[in-house]
Image (cartoon, rainbow, N blue to C red; front, side, top):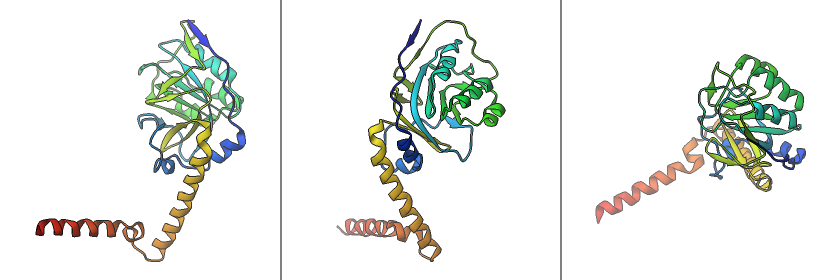
Length: 228
């Protein structure tokens, strides 16, 4: 059976432009939920994209729901595909990526496999997956779901969630968390640039970060304990 829900509200494109300025790995310094497992990897380098999650649950051999999702997708949407544990069949390839580009899709994340890596890179829509397969889905009419909460990379993804992804990792969060997360991440990114400048000026990294003093304080405490 198929289950189809309406598209979620699209996140404002200006908010997505703000989000894409932040690195997932920087947000990972202070946020601990919403990060997909590292088994889902980027097939593109030096690309960071953000978008609105539109979700697909796609069991087995039936690829109809992915076709449907690409047909529904708006510019800035991020297609998230839950393969229900399948690790043998590719859920999409070059033709789907080509159609996704035409629709303005920001990116595609598959908790499973894809195919046609050369074409995926040629067509330019960033794709993340657990790997590749030469065996592909068919349009069989067996069922699937669109616009439901799915599991992808160990994270529950709701339709309308914000997605930020690059080659270092994938972050999913509610849209209302974007502004705080980005502002804090941008401050940290600016701090890092100042740190690099201090290194160029001759300072030692552990001294700048306070690591040296932390270690010395612990050593001193150890000495005090040994004396007692």
